[in-house]
Image (cartoon, rainbow, N blue to C red; front, side, top):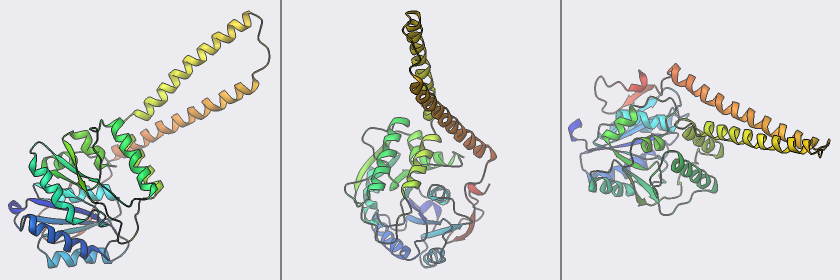
Length: 326
């Protein structure tokens, strides 16, 4: 398939999904043959799955369909860096990203395609869910992340961030220009553009396997979203320190005047213990937050590679070398 014929690239990070990957490919092919026959490609990136069936499924589909390409990574790097690897390999004018669990049905892809084609000014269209079967953990985590994106990144009002999205190539190239070791796709998009809109899509129950996003992983993702692109935690502790100093000054003046009036005694021992414990805890927490920033600075400066491709399948351009290997 010639590069200049490819209009749409569909990028899917996959992990232990070999049992249903054939269904994913079949349903995507059926949709895209109706929407853009012969002008699309599917890029599957295996995040070093612990099973053999996932990579075998990618190889099998790449042999059966000339529009399927894929690669497997040397070690596990997580969903976001795996997606960046897929963006590096994509050749289309429009790049659509989605998960491999079929909760975002391939039959909803045309809604995103039509939405981004209708408005030349829009750089990214994200699917927003009309209804879904998310558990309370995922729902709580999503609300936390959405709230943080609103406050920190100035996310446009009413815009819902999701992993089911389509973007123009120029936006994808801008995302790839960021060399951060811990990329977060949603925050990266919002830091680059406000030309984002939503389109309602269906969200179905997960038909196969179980989600790898538990409470701890969601919290970890939320921390990355905040710390990677904001100094809000440091500003918070600076504000707490300034407020505490002001309150301490007022309390000191209050007790000084009480001493002058002769109305002070030995009472207040427990209050002092509580205050010392409280501000001691705040100081240790602040040091911990500062240490987190220092650790991330060291990680960024040492320049670890974001991913390394172990093997490829399908039509890969000769001499193609992803930036993640440099």
